[in-house]
Image (cartoon, rainbow, N blue to C red; front, side, top):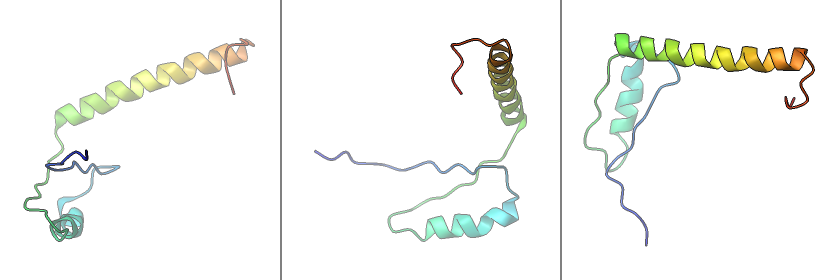
Length: 77
């Protein structure tokens, strides 16, 4: 049996200006069955979350590079 969907979430790959997003928002509104599209503004929580993710990713990369530099056989290239 096929599941029914009540909606989808669209996320941009980077923050864009509201006036630049207007054509994207209007295009989504034109899709059959869409009844509401609302923009979500960027806030300080978004910035903090991005910095946390970036810091964690940097740690993983530096640890992998350090192991590779030391010749650790468990590091895959």
